[in-house]
Amino acid sequence: MSSNTGARWKQWVLSWLVVLPLTVSMPWGLATLLELADLEWPGWLFKVVVAGLISFNMVYWMLPLSARLLSRWMLR
Image (cartoon, rainbow, N blue to C red; front, side, top):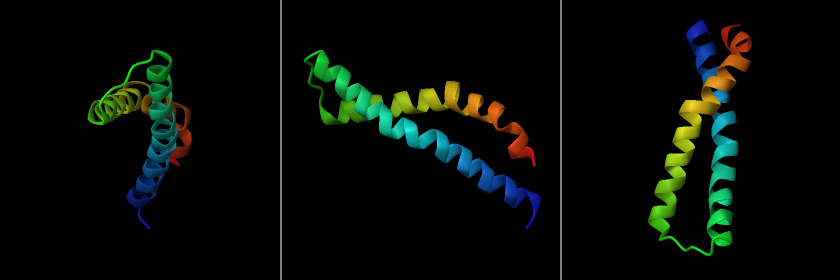
């Protein structure tokens, strides 16, 4: 197994560890906020907003933080 292949599975694990909690928590959190505010959005708008929130949080917050925290493991 080449070192490049080793790095790929670690990148996949890191991405999965970030995507999983976001895809579970973001729709639930937004639905809860909309319910508390007594708002009802069309399904397509809800999905677009959730996808945007997940992407934003992944790119600007979760992936950089997790990459820093797990950098030693990623480089092994």
